[in-house]
Length: 244
Image (cartoon, rainbow, N blue to C red; front, side, top):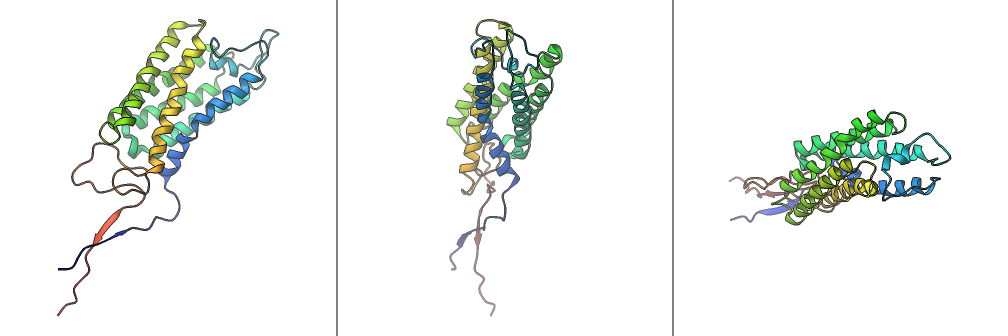
């Protein structure tokens, strides 16, 4: 009786859109560096503990405070927001429709925030920034629940990050211009960057494994008949016996 031979399909030429989507989320923690660069150029004193991120994007200057690199942070909101929305769409199969939608909304909210500096129209700025603080924590919780079978450790980390960032976002809103409002805002934002980058990293580092773990793969609980996976897959071929 002929023995089945297993061979791996050759990697497709070029890189998949899911690869670029994962890479977009992986580089987003670099946003933190832009805050440091812009804050370092302010005059009049800026506190990461007490001052909001949006103050870095204020266009106007006075003797008391000025952020000469405000354009850098505004374009950072736009650029990293676009990476979030676009990256989520590109890895939508791995994220699922709910998480994809929430992250796309978050990314567009960030883009709009960069286009509406705080000191130019405070009301508009608050309106367009609000979805970011709501949608991101919810997205992490939903993604964590989605991964509970496929990646339990990452699932727990994402669930915890979603809860912490959600509580921090609520505390930030309630604190107003309090002495720790800047720290609360960053606690609501920065861990999301790291959490999504960690998820993206798992996609990028598992793209050579067959099964449902590769880039762009569905990360919902596996089904018995589900054999599809990442960028490559294994197939079984049977040698044919000559007729006669």
